Amino acid sequence: MEFATEIATTIVAQLQKPTLAFLIGGMMLAALGSRIEVPEPVYKFIVMLLLLKVGLGAGISVREADLAALAVPAVLAAIVGVVIVLGGRATLARWRGVSEMDGMATAGLFGAVSASTLAAGMAMLDAEGIAYEGFIGALYPFMDIAALVTAIVLARMSAERRAARTVQGGGAATMTLGGGRDAGGGGLDGDLVKTILVDTARSPAISALLLGLAIGILGRPESVYAGFYEPLFRGLLSVLMLVMGIEAWQRLSELRKVAHAYVLYGIAAPLVHGLIGFGAGMVAHHLTGFSAGGVVLLSVMAASSSDISGPPTLRGALPEANPSAYVGTSTGLGTPVAILSIPLWIALAGAVIGV
Image (cartoon, rainbow, N blue to C red; front, side):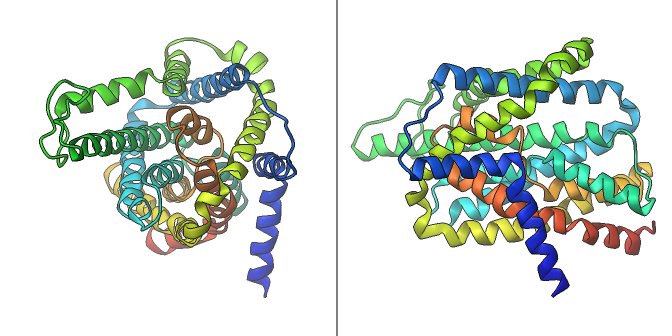
C-alpha cells in the first residue's frame, strides 16, 4: 500500500511540474476547440534560445571538469545513449502499428537525459551521505547528444530508404541523395549516410545545440548565460510545451490502436536502460576507480528521459514525429518510473561495490 501511495504521489508531482502541466494545458485547449496559436517564427526563435541555453550550460560544465577523469565515463555515457536508441529501434520502432518515426523519436528521448531526474538522484545520494565525482553533471551532454543525433540520423535514413523503395516499386530506379544507386533498398549508399549526417548537423536544432556547446567550452559565456539565458529558460520552455500539447491532441487519434506499446515501453525502458547504465558505470569503476555514487548517477541518467533538450530538438529535426508518442510516453510514464527506480540503483551499488 505504501509503495502504491508513493507511485501515486510521484505521478501527481510530475503532473504539477511546468513541463507536463503546460503540455496537458495545451491538449485541453485543443480539445475545447481553442484557436490559440504561436506563430511559427516565434516558435523557432524560442527553440533556438532553449537549445543555445542547453548547449552553453553543457559546454561550461565540460570546460570546468577534470578532463582526464572525465574521459572514460564520458565515452561510456555516449555509448550508453547510442545503445539505448538502438534498443528502441529494435523493439518499439518495430512494433506492429507503431510508426517508425514515432518509435525512433521516443527512443531518442529515452536515450537522452533528464536534468531534473539527475538532480533528484544527486539529492538522494547527498541525503544518504554517498560521495560522487564533481564532474558528473558534465556527463549528461555526452549521453544526451549521442542519443538524439543517433535517433535523428537513423529515422531519416529509414525515411530515405522507404522513399527509395516506394519509387522503385513503381518500376523506376532511384538515385539516392548522395548520388549513388540503392539497388534493392536493402543497403544505404555511403554518400547518403554522409549527406544525412551533414544535414543533421546543419539542422537548426542540432546547430544551435552544438554552437552553444562549442561556445561554452571555448568561450567565457557565464555572464550572458546567467543574465539572459537562465532567467528566460523556464518561461520559454512552458510556451514550447503548450505548443506541443496542442499538436499532441491534434494527433492523438494516431496512437489509439498502439497505445499499449508505449505504455509497456514507458514502464520497462527506464529499468532496462538503468541496468545498461549500471553496467557502463561498473566498467568505469574497474578502469578508473569511478565511485559507487558515480555508478548510481550514470544509472539514473540512463534510466531518465529528456524533458528539456530532447523535445525541442526532435520537434525541429523530426517534425513528422507525433509529440503524443514521444513526449507523452517520456514525461507521463518514463520520468515517474525513472525517479522511483533511484533507490534500486543505490541498493544495487551498495550490494556490488559497497557505499
